Image 1 (cartoon, helix red, strand yellow):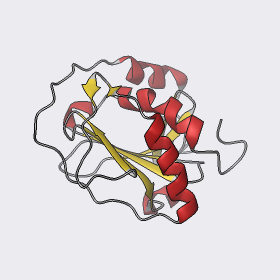
Image 2 (spheres, one colour):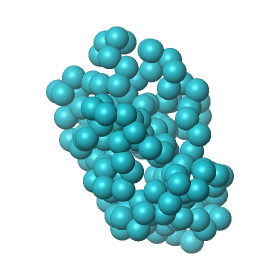
Image 3 (cartoon, one colour):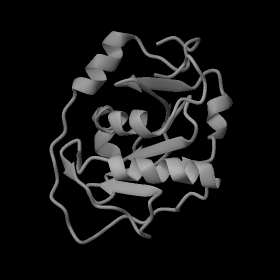
Length: 164
């Protein structure tokens, strides 16, 4: 991967990552707790539209939204996958060496926080959508592929022609 192409990976790498499969987990009563974003009203409306389009399962995991209940957050697998919509622009997005992946037409910036799995934030859209994955998804972008259609349908491109 070239550091000169911060928002794209070679197609073969993307395909290989997306082909990895994960096994599902059953839902338990324990749920994740996350900070709810506070976007401007126009962005919150986009997030509310996204919430209505999100799938019931992602990477084989059943939907189990985090606490507190909000149209700006969603989850699957009791915290294994957490989506937050309307998050602030990550500072790392200004780094020309940042890494990214494209999944089914949606571009995502990759961050690898210490002590956890990867975090992806959508790019080139009118609001930022963040997806945090637990450690089992360290080398697996399947959840992004499962979420891409919903994001593409509801969160319009903010910069043309970088987004589809």
